[in-house]
Image (cartoon, rainbow over all chains, first blue to last red; front, side):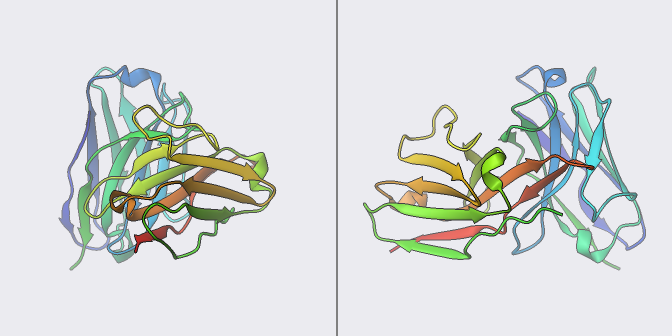
Amino acid sequence: QLMESGGGVVQPGRSLTLSCSASGFAFSSYGMHWVRQAPGKGLEWVAVIWFDGTNDYYADSVKGRFTISRDNSKTTLYLQMSSLRGEDTAVYYCARDRDIFGYYGMDVWGRGTTVTVSS
Amino acid sequence: SYVLTQPPSVSVAPGETARITCGGNEIGTKAVHWYQQKPGQAPLLVIYYDGERPSGIPERFSGSNSGNTATLAISGVEAGDEADYYCQLWNSGPYHSWVFGGGTKLTVL
């Protein structure tokens, strides 16, 4: 029901955009998150966007460099990543929240897409 | 920023009850969610809003939250429960933030 794409190998300082295609549910009725997991590490929340796209929030580690957005007509979530660093290397998951704003738990997850930042 | 503290590992014999804690300042005033992650897989929500189970999650999984500690309990532990478990919450305040605990590796002996 959620499928990420757009990952790959990118040089430090460059940009990359991830996509998450949703199906099988009313996409426009849910808050959506990006969560990442560096190799061998735990989960790190990255960003959230409200159901209608009117509000978004970011982890301090990506604020000012990453932008979350959504196109409800295309049932697709995006993560624009710029000024990438080695510490951004991770599997990136998109996840649906149980709530329109993103407050009540992530109940549907994609399989993830891998981003490797390396020269 | 708000910090959630989990023990790195918990070990339990099959059939016993595993308890995984998640510590945070006045965490009892916040809604805590728990995720199970097996190697190579995406996380799975097993408890939301402190103690509610999503459909399809066995009754063996339960949660509680009070004071400075939230707890995930798994009764009648099975080999298939071996996984990493993460607590997570939304922290309101001057700037909203979403936080995961560091994760706990559950080993079934």
